Amino acid sequence: MRKQIAAANWKMNLDLQQAEQLMTQLLATDHSLGKDQLALFAVPFPYLLTVQQKLAGKTNAKVAAQNCASTNNGAYTGEVSAEMLKGMNVEYVIIGHSERREYFQETPAILAAKVNKALEAGIKPVFCCGEPLTVREADTQNSYVAAQLKESLFHLDKSQLTDFIIAYEPIWAIGTGRTASSDQAQEMHQHIRKVLADQYGQEMADSVSILYGGSVKAANASDIFGKPDVDGGLVGGASLDAKEFAAIINSLK
Image (cartoon, rainbow, N blue to C red; front, side, top):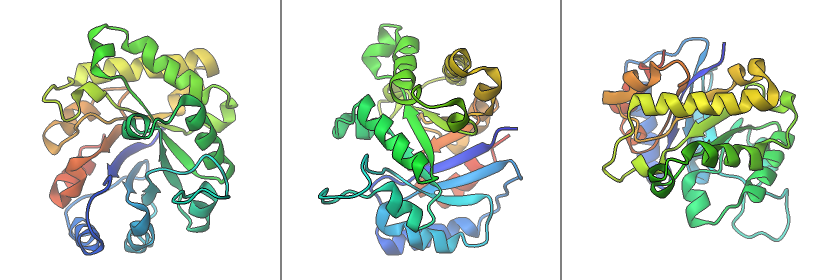
């Protein structure tokens, strides 16, 4: 059975004291995770060890990095490599988030290199894909997302993608006032799984956890997570509220 995952993406928010307070509040909330469920906390680099210490002893709650470099080391001021994350026992890393693609011009080739480096270090990528409003309005979202997967993942062997994590971000429904329905989420998740199955076989495709990353909140999480091909969520703003994120965790099926 593939994992059901609630992944918090704090982005560039909170100071250290606020980060510690948020984790303390969250751990005190009424939430539970089954053996096939996982909570991820993608926190800013300076807080990785702090949050990791807060989660010590928990087998189904882990920290994740929000990014990694496409190289192992060298004269790349400000970068953090997968090897560095490995040395901190970080097990997960987000790669290809829409904000990295848009603001930092990360290309499919760069993302493929980052995926390679993460896997070489034994770190599991949370690979993001998703279409902007212009693509959705042109009704070409299926081919657009398929191209993102093919260009950055299809150089990998099937064994490297087993138990992989993909996060679908409908960029047009994030902070725009527009809302993607649970049916639209299911439609795209089903499409992503078919793209994987066509390349690697249904068994591998069925092992991949596909998360929805379009303004998930406690109020809509159960509806979205209830869809057969939606395996949880990549949660932005709502993950900065302990009670809200606890309710999202409890919405996992």
